[in-house]
Length: 138
Length: 138
DNA sequence: CTCATTTCAGTTGCACTGAAATAA
DNA sequence: CTTATTTCAGTGAAACTGAAATGA
Image (cartoon, rainbow over all chains, first blue to last red):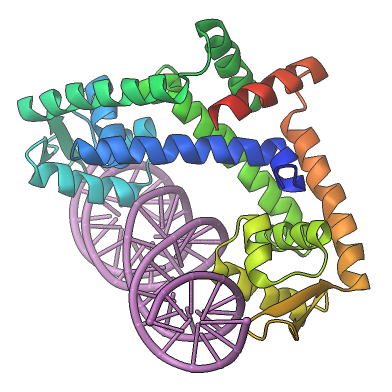
């Protein structure tokens, strides 16, 4: 039965499409040695430059706790450095390393490929329409 | 900065819209005394008639473990009955009670209202386009 | 023997909360 | 004093896994 109540609900279709995107992205990032939070934090760092964890959390839409843990992981991998901020000793300054910048460049390509795969059945016109409608819903 | 990498990704937009739908639906169902799984299982039951937990899980897209737990809850509330299947003693037969059918009718209205609220900014033409594109992605 | 069904305990990734420590 | 930042431990819902018990 492909015509259940569930499958006719826009909210269900939305959840299905989102789950597919989520799964695909997680898979491809994992194959590149990263988790979703890693990409979001590295991208935020690239956009802001060296920044406090609080600022990064805002930019990457990550909770303070998750920022702390993700920075731990990225620092252990040598992709970022964490040092005390001399101007405000409550803060850490997180900075991208050269290796982190290279890693991010790779992840950007992976993420772009996932978008293409996700939208592969839509024309570029349809893609634009879809994203426009999505924005008006979200 | 509203133009972060993240916010330009279709997969991110999709996740945001889906999260909004998810939150809205959960909220409204909770206000009606139900959880998402309750609605999905009751709707499946209405579509199949009395059925085994395995069949319900397939229809409602619920894991066997979650079906077992959800049936526990719905049976405790008097919305469904669980009885051994005389034709196959491995199975339980789950059936909707009158009270369960009334509850489902209410939840159907709640869920429909959520769809309307979710799509409130789109014309009916746009809604059709959106759902069609979603199907081609999911 | 195998396969299907149900139950139970446990796991995983994600998002978040509360409280403490530190310092502006 | 209050507020901001970071850290840590823990919570909660969602989705799933493995193993055992039962029986087709």
